[in-house]
Image 1 (tube, rainbow, N blue to C red):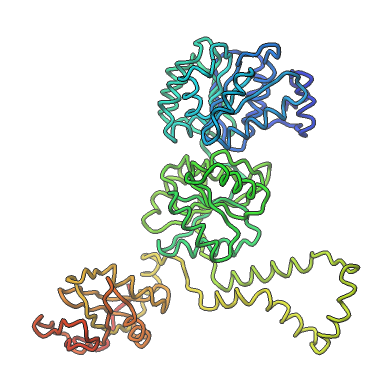
Image 2 (cartoon, one colour; image 1 turned 135 degrees about the vertical axis):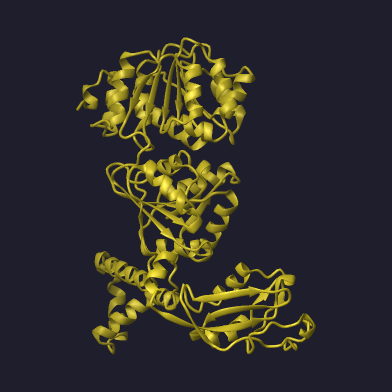
Length: 567
């Protein structure tokens, strides 16, 4: 295994990477750096997020720069301003002992005039996002006639984000005899087409298993009803008190809504999406990098360029549409030899997509049971006890107060003191989770097998609304579930007629259903539930449709309790 000090890099670079404590190169660095130092042919390098790609191409680029020239000799394109700034800062760290080395970052959301002024002074390397680079090229401000190297970092993501026109346009501005270096985690068709059109017989390097997940990441999923995803996310956070991760959502709106709900529930979170200003983004990112924010709720596009080594969890609020996206996301945890966890919350419609992801990942994604309220409380309790055991007591600073405290609490024995001590911190969890529902999705096959020999007694309820009121089976089941009598309460036959409906519900919860279903409204109209008495249908003429009287004259039907096997 080659080490950094065995590479033929300039002395100034060797000194800088020694300061950074670089000793053993990552796999992509071991394969790319020596090859790039010795070759000027085009290169395609396949490597996952967090594998050290910036040093893999950055060190050879800086090593070949002519410091006496003020021409732009290398240009790096990347998908987001965050990644653009990260690459720029890394290049500055690598080149800190090299005199006259200058680099400029050009990206949207910042003053273009400042970037133009910096380019006017002359720089060796430009790092930019495709949109801003293409704009400066069309204005004839950015001169790339002399570039020797063009690096496309995260090429797949740039194309996924809709930069195809800009990328193809930029390629046409650059010299034909340049060296093109393409780094990507995946090779979708658009990347393959771009490579065929603009690269010449490229050499190919692959680090690790192409398109596969890292070995030190555990993959789990929770299957719940769609309406329970938010509550499942809260339990995941509560079950992992020291969680530090990213929650990926589909849209900017969903990202903001979930972040606001979590903030109102006193979770340490913030959101990152495309509607934020540059100052807002920087504030959020600084807070997250410093660990002041435990969970970052983000969209894929906004999260590009986040480079944090200590993430414990990646959480997918929905399974991503493409398996490669899942692998990208999960690769953000489990870095630098540490372990990580990737969690996906799915409903029953999304299970097929998890199978596709699992096949691409090349390893099983295990289904886990959503933690119960008791499990969460136990976890939080022992986390609190761990904090107490490890806290550093500054006795000298507390000396003036301890005697008064001892005297105040001397009437309590040891057991009572511990109980009260824990209750101060812990009562909120006990109160919140005392009647916590089971959020796990009840799989039909498992339910049938489990209940095949059991009978359940149903009560048939009359509901004073029907299809003419836009009441559907789905809407009626939603109203019943809102009562939260019991998770996965047994429901029998549902009949939606024109002006009224019937629904069979587990008789054990008869009184609670009667009491609470009548408090519900559908489309602004008050529901009324009664136990039906006859089984024959009613004529519409028998029904009093005056909604002003909640008592009404609706006939009561069907009825008596009967036995039916659970489904």
